Amino acid sequence: MTLPSEPTTTSSDIIIRASSFGGCDRAILASLYGEPKKPTTAKQQEAFDRGNAAEDKILARIAKENSTKVVDQQLELTHRIQIGDISFALQGHIDGRLDTHSMAIAEAKCLNKQSTEKFLRDPIKYHRKYTFQASIYAYLLQRHYDLPQTPAIIFGIYNWELKKYHVNSYPTFHTWEEIEARLYRIASYFFGHTYPEFCNEYSFFCDYTLCNKEPAPIEPPSELDQLLATYQSLKDQTEIAKQAVLDNVSTRSDFPIRTATHTITQTAASTYQSIDAEKARILLGDKYEEVLVSKTRSASFTIRSKSSGSNIS
View 1 (cartoon, rainbow, N blue to C red):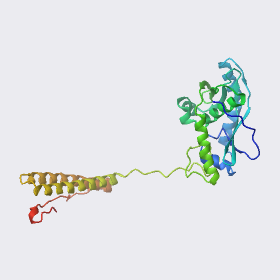
View 2 (tube, rainbow, N blue to C red):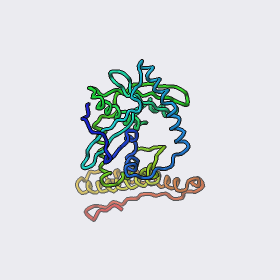
View 3 (cartoon, rainbow, N blue to C red):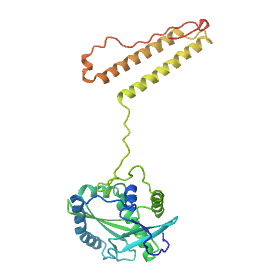
């Protein structure tokens, strides 16, 4: 799609970097609110330095495999979107583009073995920041040169652990509508100067202390809880069955009361006993084998004629 022409950014624009757009909403908002960043760690700096050192070699590999040159390196691209009274500017610098009619975006990434494998397996699932970043670049480059079609994206990945290159071409990973919808969601928090309650994207290199906040895990019901729930359910079912026996006593003289009652009684007694034994096993743990279970629950039912005030106890 062709985006409408927009003026360049002004001092009043709220700038969102394309490189961070696919990351956590809370981190993006922290940046917009001017929250202080955590100091860069030695491990972060090492990764940045490694990527910067490898970029030209990766772009050269992309050019070689596509039999062309990579041009427009570090070209700045900007697109402004007015939401209410505020102008949001999506902005970034592309690594380069192919010097061809299609002007495919060239993106260079230096990753370790595990990250490379994840990217090749499913870029959107494992490297959403990269897929949003490159998609935004493709749409903005299309607008910049007024191209009839959105350029393809050429990712050059250098696996620094195995010293191996991977060069693959992709269409845009995300639609422009998806990008706009995400921006509007971020803007809705920005207008209220609030944050989402939880992070929606975990980042190993999160720049802000407020991030990587995850919902409290929902503990699955314990074995004993499940057991007690089963116990109560069986007890309720037994009461329903008992009432069904009484209802049939008053309407059908040939109903096999004794047989039905015996079946209910034996089933309930057997079930309750097994549940009680299982509860003891859970609660006593390793000591269970040492404990002599001298008494188990039994169920006894007494049936009297409904005409004389039938009840089951």
